[in-house]
Length: 128
Picture 1 (cartoon, rainbow, N blue to C red):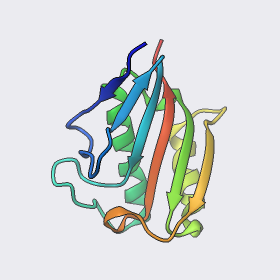
Picture 2: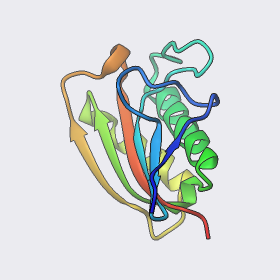
Picture 3: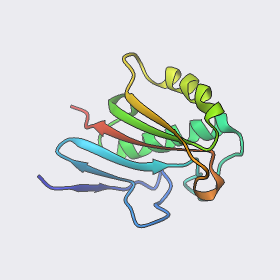
């Protein structure tokens, strides 16, 4: 099988030496997304709820470009600069995903690129 590198202008461009996603054997490995506006590459807001929404929008655009969707996510890694925002992530996930929910890890970290409060990466299956 060959690797397919995924890119869409609807999501922020990589701000380093990585691809938005890589597809291999029907599995999509998504790089971390922070809440950047894809056109301006500027943080969308300083409010956590808006940042969470934008991260999932960005992930969704990359998944769509790869032939998948948010509903095909198998595993999420959520990075937060303040773990008190964890309940807000749960609220958004309950709106986005149906049960059973994807596997997930939540990690508290000191800081994220561009002053973001959240970053999420994911592993997803290709739509069948």
